[in-house]
Length: 221
Image (tube, rainbow, N blue to C red):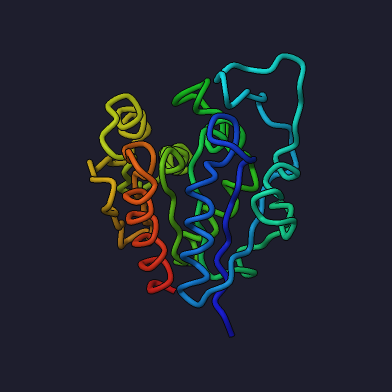
């Protein structure tokens, strides 16, 4: 039976949802590893909607995170509230600012952010059961918030961005600088992170880091 890898999406589009390149690379790498992707997202409104040509917020427009994420998943997606830790074997978060806007509020509240309760539930549940999980791009910063004040905070990377790495350190986790093609493995917590487009200049180098992340994730199951 194929191993099931939960892929948590945060919408559709780098500025207000999931980074599409990162999510597609993740899904392709999971399939090539012989595993099955189980896509999921919160059934909530996005923080806001951004015009991806201008980079400006679209005033008055609303979009649903689950509905938008379904575009990436080709409609095969679950409400994250219905997913239990025992339903899947591993967990991964692609990046995009939706991870810091819709899955948590670090983009606007920094270290004082809130994390969506079902995201926190799954992440903590996975660590409690020693199941492997991963996050790329900006998503690892969310892990620092989830494990704030915990006895064994994780070692994470978002590349070498000074502002975001400082946020991670301020929340009690350890940040480790990392090249875009590389990964950081916290063996004790079974958490893998990689910089992706926080550092990457091209889709091919971003793919190297994400593919290595997925390979290690599957090997940890």
